[in-house]
Every structure is written in C-alpha cells, then in structure tokens.
Image (cartoon, rainbow over all chains, first blue to last red; front, top):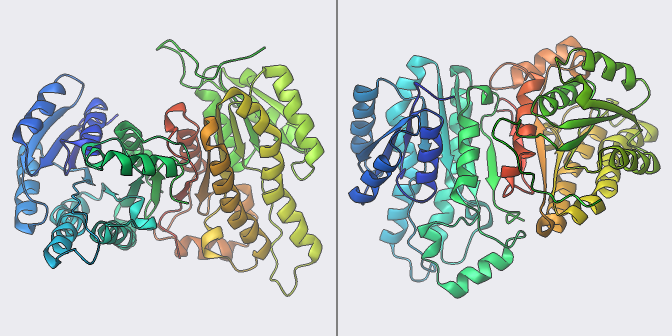
Length: 246
Length: 261
C-alpha cells in the first residue's frame, strides 16, 4: 500500500512511535525513525523489522533544535529521495504541579513536544510543497483537551498542537498536503508505565472501557490518515481514548 | 441461538465476513457508498428506508458486482420508533445478529428561522436526531447481550459551524454528537463503540438539490476548494466499524476538507 513511500516518524523507536514505524513498514513504506537517546533500542527495531515489506533507518537528532531537524530531513531526502509522510510523535513529560514546576521544566517540554513539531514541519515543508503532496500527522493527547494534575507543561504543549495543526491545515489545503492530529488516551507504553501503580489504577478507573489502549490501536489511526484516499481529511482531530475525553 | 462475537476467519476471507450491518438511508448518497463498501468487505447489509428507497436499493444492488445478494431492503421510517423496532426484529430474525449500525438517514428542510414552521423543525429533528435514538434503542439490547457492537452516527460539519437556513438540521446534527458521547459512555464496558463521522459538503443528491450559488459558496468556503466524494466519507465509517477500532469510542471524526469555521 505504501511501497515506494518514505515516512519520517519522530520518536519512532519506542512506545506509540515504534508501533507507527512497524505498521508503516509493514505496509511497505521506508520509515526513517528519529530518536534522541537509545541507539541500541533504535537499532533493534531496525533489525526486528527487516523483511516485513518496507524498511527502517534510524536517525539520531533533537527535534527541539531546528538545525538538527533540517539536517535529518536533508539526510533522509539524500538517502531515500523523498518524504511523503511526517509523523510528529516525539514527546517527553516532566510532571510537577505548577508550584514546583521550574521555568526550565516548562521550557523543555514545550520545546520538544510543541516546537519540535514546528521545527520538523518547517524543515520538510518546502519539499512537500514542491512535490504537491504530503501528509502530516501530529500526535497530541487526550490531556491536551482535559488537562491533568501535574502536567501544565505537557497539556499546554499537546493543546498547542491542535491549534498548530489547524493553522497549517488551512495554509496547505490547496497544496495537496493534509495535516491532522491523532489524540490518544492512556496507552500501554513506557511513558505510562512510569506512572506509579496506584495512580495508574485511578486512571484506568476513569477510562470508560476500563483498560489502557495498545500502541497498535493508535498506529492504525495514523496509518489511515496517511493513506492517499484520506485526502479530504485535514485539520481534524481523531481521538483514540476508550471514551476518556468526556 | 447464541453467537459469540469475535469471529474467527481464514486469511483469505474478507475482513467483515459474517458481520451484519444496518445502514439507515443506505440506498443513496453517502449511505449508498457505505452500503457498497461494507458489502464489498463481506458484510451482509440491511438497508433501512422508506417505501421509495426500495427501488433505489434495487438499482444499487444491480450495480454491485457479485455481492448484490449481501444487500437487502427493510422498509421503515426511522422517525417512527415502532417501525424501527420491528425492522430490527426482522433483521435479527433473518440474520441472527447485528454487529454494525450506521445511522445515516437524514433529511433537510431549509428555511431561515423567521420562516421555518414548527412542523419543518419537528420533521427534521424526528428523522435526523430521534431516528438514531430509536435505532440505537432497538439494537442495543441485542448488542449488549452479545458484548459486541459498532455504532456510527453520521453528523455533519454544520453541527460545528452552523449554516444559514439550517437551524433544524444543525441542531439535529449537533444533538447527534451529544447522543454519540452519551451512548459511548453507557456502552463502553459492553464491547460496543459509538462514534460520529462529520462530513463536509459531499457530492450527493442532497447537495445537488441546493441552489447552485449555495453549492459554489460551500466549495469556496472549503479550504480544499472541492466537495467530498461519498466514498471519502464511507471509508471513515468503514474504518470505525472495524473490529480493530475497539479503542475508538465517543469520538467525532471530521472529513471536511479543512472546513471548521
């Protein structure tokens, strides 16, 4: 389905990002999976996905540094000829109540989660416009809509992605490029596993389906939005949360 | 006879083989594209419609290569709760199960509020909002018993934006989003997902009936500067009724070419 296509997935070697990388590679794409730390994890996913249909390359970099984003995009275009899809998935949490949250805690999360999406989009945009085709998917979070105690920085960054996505969707609507958001609820990943057990039990209690989502359940929504036939979907927010956002 | 929900399928089978879907208003417009896609993927499709939809269903069947036998017509006016119940009972009697309900039937009676009669208001609310409620009420006990169900309500972009001359239609379509979220909550632990799809202006008879100037204005208002094809909406419905879309519930999936304002 995606054979001959090239996808860039930031944070594409772990958690939801790894599931996205896997699902796109299985559909035949070449996936350039970005990572910041964890070279071994990155290489292991590349090894694991050999022979699934498409292929995977790993690219170390920092999404909070525009020059680094530019370097990685140039690298991908040089090596694989094109970028059809950009999935801005990289994200971090530094959870603290506002009283204890330092300006640095705020800045770091905004820089990676929100400015990272800007940097990557900006780095790839001219290329997509030139080709008159492209799909951008930004991974937000249910927390962007509901807020969450201890996550002022994270929720602001994820809500910010909604506005960013809608604006670029409007700017790119007549250029063959769509931009959408996928907003997952609580998904069984390392990030969620770092939540203390008692707190996690409380979270699950709040999810109407009483379970965490699986990374694959998010990845399939991302893949759906990337398909050629999804061209009329732009500026949209597709939630995958077991009913939580209410 | 009790049928357990997860079907086991051989790899060569279609992904919806063995599933039974009801599509209200499934004989034309977006509904016909939905019926066509679900049937192509293996589902048995029960099209619910009023008397004149029987012939439209025949024409749809005639255009379905090799899968026409999967599509059947059941007469019912969704604005009448007794007719909904009896149609659902007939589908269950003949197919033994209902896995999917797509509330797609809708009508418009456009007029500015100053000129809109109480009857015009009530008629649109009855079909577009009460209809989905009656249908959900009719299928839900069966889905709960089988611990499986996929319900999709077709809302509209105008639920969010409003639209000149459509007080009744926009209220019904916005109401449908509230209905979707509430039933999603109530059914979340029963293996049933409930979602809405909100199309933008789509190339159907309903839009063709609008004055040409209004269609042109809609096209210009759409950031992508084009109307949707019915198939572009149908594939989102198809995605949501998939067994694997289990974690998506209470959501509204927009398909509108960027038209949010």
